[in-house]
Length: 443
Image 1 (cartoon, rainbow, N blue to C red):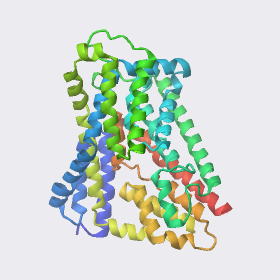
Image 2: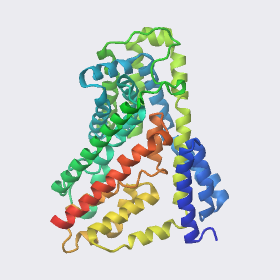
Image 3: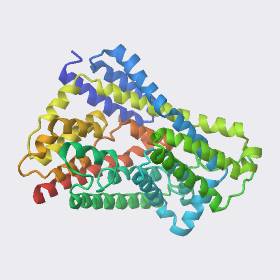
């Protein structure tokens, strides 16, 4: 009975809603994901025991296998940047020239540049400079996180010509290029940028008005600690060099040597951590000590690896729901205006799977050639709508990538999700739907 379509659908909805409520009520994200998964498991075809002991557990393990070393490597690098006061030096210098209220936009610009360069692990790199920058600006870390997650929906999913996977996928199905419908692409890109800028400005003013600054909670203090004595703030060049180096190395390993994005990040951070230790030899070797840097840098990330893995497992359990195939079939059978059909189908599949690219690929494989050949349908406009719609509901609470980003920024759902929801769900829904309207009128 629990695996019937109506009941399974109800369980799916209840588990996701309950997950959000628990996070906002102060339940740890990992615990909330476990409880929500246990409820969702009653509505899966594999049965409760198999789902929890195999699907969910393997999800946690899979995430750890794929990203644990990246998290730990980033932890060591971030720890050195923090304790040598490189982060503070970078933050103070940038704030001096651009002002504290522009700090989040610096992070967004760096994230955009890395994405345009094809660095898929950009969030690990940006996080290394985010803490010092936001501390110098005296702004809460959730605004820095919001500024960074606002970037991918625009850069990878709306801009014309970018070589990001979402923009490349439709070309083989629709016979288009990455420059498909440039006018439509630019229109929704500009709309997305304007909405993001105005919203971030609103968050900054709200924080200033309410007196919400950078955290001083001991458990979330990202500035250099006092246990190593008074450490002088390094000159800007010595502080920024590790950031430039890790970007250059990661780009070289990934683009020139064709190493996977995650491995390129890991190798880049290992080398850069070594260079940072040499640049700040006295502080790292004599005050912090190498064993302490390695131990604390890696172990600081353990809770966030587990948190992200638990959410990843929850996403896999949700995909095992008995109603999933039925709902996807129903979504794929929607038949209204071709552009609206494509938009709605991909949006809904993205919501179910927490993966918009999979939803777009699924739709393209079934209907891509058929819709592109329809009279009155412009393949370029269809391309643009599909790409934009795939970044709408892929950031719901059971999204593993969302949990990964929060983990790297050492924040959680309660503190940050309502802001990221606006930037990664609400705004993409708006600008992609505007794209549908433009396509219907002008294409």
